[in-house]
Image (cartoon, rainbow, N blue to C red; front, side):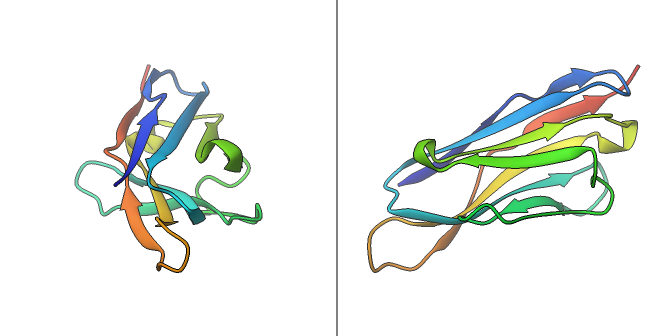
Length: 121
């Protein structure tokens, strides 16, 4: 069984910074894409940033230049460094991973439970 556990959310003032972490554990053979999504109240979940297994990254236009996604493949962990935070970044942030539990098995999607990020003065 695979689990994704996020940490690092909290309350921060506009212009501040936070670093989110997401560790995958359990039966893991390989991880392809890892990503961060977010969902604000009353809005649909949106993709924030992705990282491939070889480190290729992509970002939503709304966070480009402010957020940085990175991975530690040895620890099956993905990070999201968030700088110059704005009130509109307030949301529950979810970790996502495409994970194969065993050699020869397909990659399945897994989600973390979410961590709240609130940007407010």
